[in-house]
Image (cartoon, rainbow, N blue to C red; front, side, top):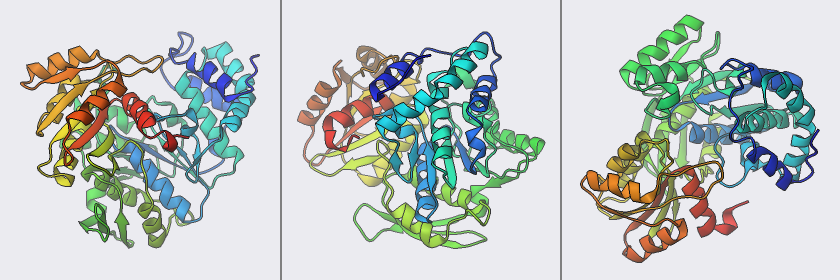
Length: 441
């Protein structure tokens, strides 16, 4: 049995599992994830949870929910993916990631369970192992509640072993179509798979065809369908501080009013969804409106419409599908009307590059296409991205090294312009770490 003594050894072990898939020894279901958790003593049964899926917005919504719950005095676990800079970001309690050494020690403790599971089902994947580690960490730290983001889809995602207090779907759009299907109805069916009997399913505004699929599936399994638009009336206005807004959200149960520091129209939609989710929690878990206000006021979501003040303004925003790209463009129009945008973009090989670039090209802009250096991940070559842009009637330069691409964009930008680092999570992480080394744990 392998011994894990340091975070570097943990990283080496987990990186080697990135290529693992569902083994031929198990069906494409949740068999292996459930077996691994059984070997670990079913840690996810030790606390109530909230389960959040969707094409876009689920990570931000999870962060909002966790912040509100922590502000109410509850010890709150949070699992999101992917991480920006460190695997420790996948296991967070009250806003603090697990320490690197605790991460290594916990993975070492899990090795007998991992080996026993591998003997029957094949080795657990990178994602499965990180998820199991987070769920185990929450159990050992005796959290009051955990908020867990779906990894991919929902029906067959490893997180679907949870029996949550509330489940939510933040959006339906085209992403991971090679796995989830190439129609909104097919994608909605996979996302709706997190619905469970007796568990409220909160659903944000989604296309009518997708909503019909989700609502039908919820009815079939006995989950109460809760439409965000039907239960939350939200009014937004300018906040007291520049660049902030204020929300007044009225529900059948309460009124919430708070300053909201995050840029982006999509973040406001996520906030409204989070309020609807909190409303569905049992009395013992539900935060008071004042707690929600406190938690939301101190929100920070790195890499999601993250603004660095200066001249020119810098924005880091992960937009790896066409829906997220459009949401970014809409938010830029609102936050920086009339200002020229300089995009620094890298896109993963399995993404809809044409749809993403077409959305970005709606603004007066320049493109600098680049790549990223992340083990186990492949970027579309920047020259191919430039060719796609040309076919769309726009133009962009191709620079393979990401830091140099950002240098070029900054040299081109006027003081009143906006530079946006976007596309893949991996290029946002790489350039954020390069540009803000002190902000990276």
